[in-house]
Structures are given as structure tokens and as C-alpha cells.
Picture 1: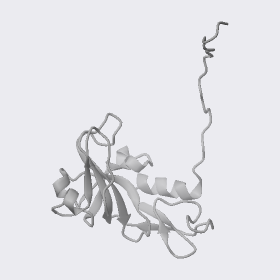
Picture 2: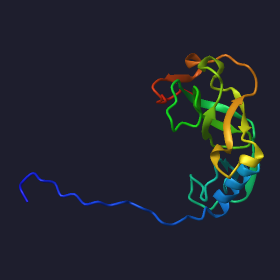
Picture 3: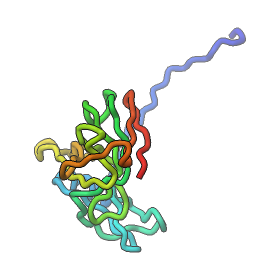
Picture 4: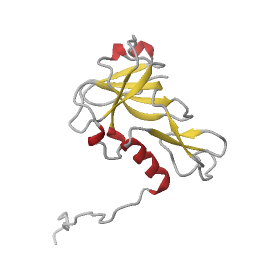
Length: 172
């Protein structure tokens, strides 16, 4: 082999197994399929959404599964003006951290507000669910969150505008 020639070996990286989601994540996904959002109560009394099997602060096992929301408060957001082909919506939207009622952590999801001027940090949002027959136990069973009521907003109210399908960090 001459110097500078590259060795090439064809290889397909494949993971031919399935993973069980377990009782905590399974409860979350089943809840989504059924049109409910659940979290896990930590030993200190907090509620983690989406639930994790362990308390993110202490590493202890979480306790009971509890229903939260469905409404919540936008804590931070970033506007996507030109969604790419793999984005959850085919029109401009916001990625947002949403603290659901009863939760002590935020959940990342999308807000379909129409324009960045119609969204502000602190706004109340509710889920817009897929039809029950189309739900499969996936986070996108919630098509998007939508504002509870009309509100002003935009970058001056805590959001940030992004272009070319990317998202910029919103201030909270």
C-alpha cells in the first residue's frame, strides 16, 4: 500500500435489540398515550417531569407517580423561524421550557404561538393533543403546547428569535 492511501472497511453500526422502558418511563409514556402527563415524586417532595428513575439531586429512587398539569408556565423559550424537515412542526414555533402545574422541574417541548410577539416568558400554556386514536405513547402525542389566552411578548419579554431552523437561547 502506498503512503497516503486510506484503508476502507465497509461497516454498518447496528443495535439489534429493544429496550424496556421500565415502570417510571413506562408510566410517563402510557400517560401520554392516555392524554395525561405524569411525573415522579422525589424523596424530598419535588416532582420531576418527565420522570426519571432516580432523584436528579440525590440519586435516590423516586417514589410515586403523580399526575401534573396539564397547563404550565413558559420559563424560557427560543423561536424557530424556519423549521427544518425533522422539526416537530412545519411552521414557525418556539422550543420552550415549560413548568407544568404541580411539577418542580421543567419539560422541554414546543409552543405553537403563531409568532414570537404572541409568546412571553411567564405565559400560561396548555397541551394540544393528537387525536386519541393516533397516540402511541410518545412525547409528540402532545403536538404542541398553545397559549391559554392572547398575550404579547417576543424577544423583549424573554424569548429569542432564531433563524435558518436553529434555536437561540431565550432568557428567563
